[in-house]
Image (tube, rainbow, N blue to C red; front, side, top):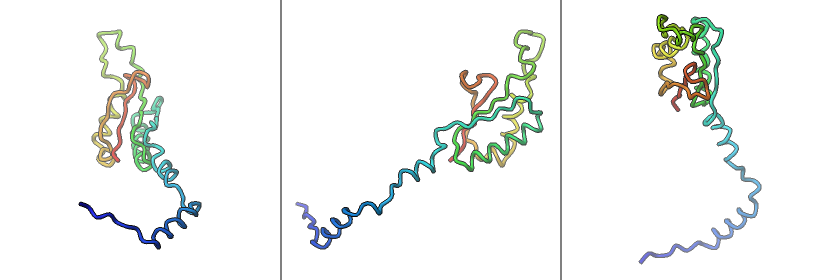
Length: 139
């Protein structure tokens, strides 16, 4: 049989006086919310109009900044490329969309940003489908 622990009168008195003056205690919830405010948000970068070199520089800065600010999911919109109408023509390569194919390859090769990423996946249709992809960042 377990012995019940009895609380001393002093402890009881201290507890009662402590709970009467709860105004001095701050809630941790706002701090927690501020710290994790980007956890479920998706940060978006649209690369339409960028050259390949410009896009590589922008994507690197974007990933590093997003990682340091605590974002977990990024949406990168590259577009299908100026040659996106190539789907209708069987004689033109569909691999000509420069940013769409080059940016994920650049990210995989660039060690500084690749270490911050868990995976890269194709975006949902509502977020751009074939012309966009998601980047999931590590904690």
